[in-house]
Image 1: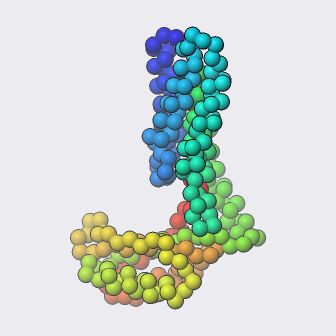
Image 2: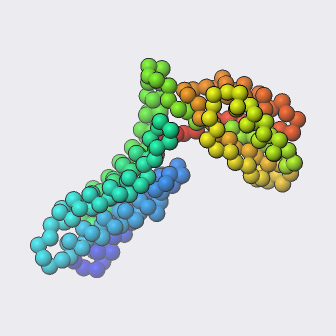
Image 3: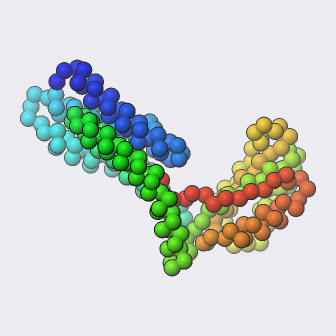
Length: 234
C-alpha cells in the first residue's frame, strides 16, 4: 500500500470519527469529539496494520477483535443514576465510531461516510421521537425519576440565605436534592446564581411552579426559573 493511500484512509477515519463526535460534544456527553475521533482512528490503524502485513492476516479478523476490544470504553460511559441508566446511547455511538473507522481503514470510503452520517442522523432525528414515546408511556407505567433544575439569581450578600431557604423548603417535601451550586452571575458582579438539581418521582411541573413562586417572594431574589433536565441516556 502506498503511503498516500495509507494517509487517505487514516484521514478519512479521523474526519468521520470527529463528525460523529461533534454531536456528542455538542450535547456535553462523556465521550465527545476527541474520544470518537480516536476510536475511529485506532480502529482504522488496526485494519491498516492487517492490510500492510506480509503474513496472511485477514482484515475482517482484525475488525472482529476491534469490536471485542471496544467494549471497555462502552462500559466506562454507562452510569447508574438512581433508577435510571445513562450513557447507553453514548456507548452505542462509540461502537459505531469504531465501525466507521474499520470501514475507512479498509478503503470503503463511501460506506464509512454513509455510516457516519447515519449515526449522527440517528442521534439527532430519533431523539425527539424517543422523548415523545417515553412521555406517553409514563402514564401507563410506574413513575420514573425526573430531575428538575432550579436557577435562582440573588444579591451577592444573600446567597447563603437563599440556599438555606431552598434547603428548608425542600425539607418540607419528598424531593431529593441531587446537587447545589452557587457561582457569580455572568455580566453582573453584584449578584450570584444558585443552581439546584432536584430529583422527583414522575413529572411535578405544578409543584415546581409553587416552589418557584415561594422563592420569588424573597426581596433579595431577582429571578427564579426551572426546567426539566434531559436525563435521557446520551
